[in-house]
Image (cartoon, rainbow, N blue to C red; front, side, top):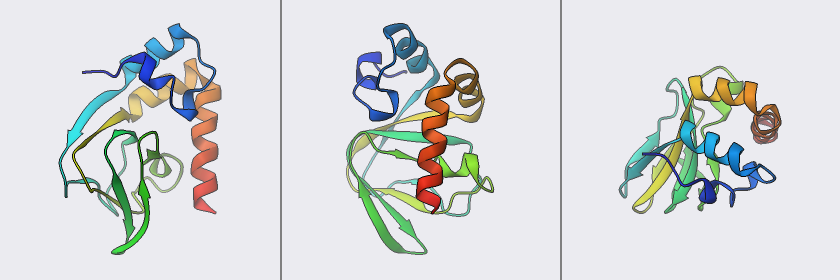
Length: 130
């Protein structure tokens, strides 16, 4: 299942994209449902996807300490694409919800077709790393 392109238009990362670009982008995302307590990202694991929280709440923990709670529209998991390829934190669901996942192969397609979006994502990762 893929997200509705209109939903993607509401996410800051994708602001300014045309309807055709949003439709293409939606085809590259998979929808992942999750329940409370489910670990979506494992600290130290290899990272092959980044995520956008669509519904629900998740918390980000590093070495067991809570760093932040994320709300819908938040991006997570992107840092593994630009660092050592490993997750630097756990992301754990606090409620039922849904995340949009884009795997590395699709990300590379996005880099080629929408380099400005890929650059925004890379900028976000670098901001978080500092």
